[in-house]
Structure formats: C-alpha cells, structure tokens
Length: 61
Image: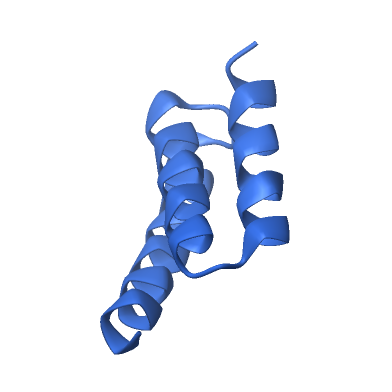
C-alpha cells in the first residue's frame, strides 16, 4: 500500500503540472487523469476512480 500511496502523490503532482503547463484537455493531462483513475481503482477508491475516468473520457470528446 505504501508504494501505491507514493504513486498517488506523484500522479497528483504530475497532473497539477500538466494542467498548469498544457491545460486540462491536453492529451498528456488526460492520460495522467486516466492513469490516476486506474491507480485509484487498484487502491479500492472506486468513487475517485470513476470520477477520473469520467473526466478523461469527457476531455477526449
């Protein structure tokens, strides 16, 4: 669980950087959002995972 928590913090920092530098709908930002959703699912944080996946899909439309 410790490594997953560490990965979560890394993804959150990366996401903030991508949003600031590239915007919320850039491919790299959305890929990070989706990856964070996968991570949340593996942690059992299903509500958070769903939110990330919905956001990623909405941004790709």
